Length: 140
Image (cartoon, rainbow, N blue to C red; front, side, top):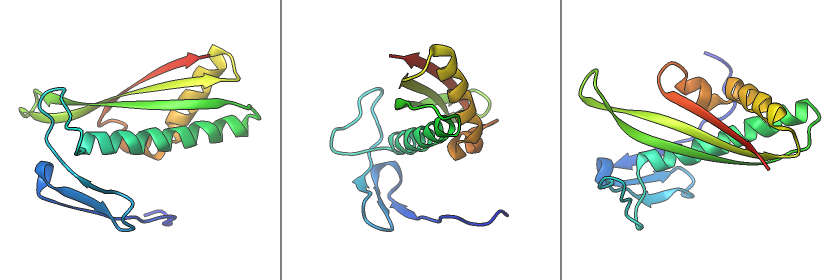
């Protein structure tokens, strides 16, 4: 195993109708199973938490790739995580669409940076081969 840089913990109880809390208490939320597209306003769910983590991690990777190329960008990443039916086992799986809005570079430069970030991002590495990830790039 590679050298550890960071380890963090979160503890969940009660499953999708339970609670999750990070070791430092910053994340401390109730969980609720969405009813179709309706997400309760007083609770979160694993997909929403995954979306937040992926968006933050990917934006960090994108900005690192831009700085390595001496590009001054402003970026916003929206991670859209879908819970999908998995026909292979009648269970569920995840699908992700990463929407990258980038200013400061051309469309082709933005697309190149997003693909480099996707190669570098730890979340992208973790999902590669397991989760379908679509990249959508828009410049403004």
